[in-house]
Image 1: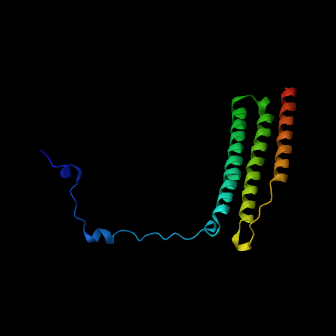
Image 2: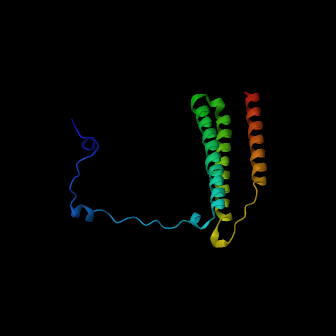
Length: 144
């Protein structure tokens, strides 16, 4: 019959003091720009990053992937459609990049700025671009 303590316990291995000396020194984390912000502002910055760096980039990658599929799988007649999707994807990506840079500007503690301008003009520009891209695609499909 075995003792319950002997089942759960493991034999300890002797550790030499020289093994502790070979460990690298601990890494000291330097403060980031976000460490100076309040919790509410950190939450805002993360939300903007999810939107501009996440959603815009995912949409641009999706449109670019669709453009590549159209260009590679179909005949040369569909090349203008792939070009429209490629231009649309590139504009979406750079719009998201521009908006993410604006967030870095608005929450810069060195410049004492903690305000954010709404995305009204960006939304209007992206709406107009999307509408123009879909009209161009519709016209291209009708002419085929």
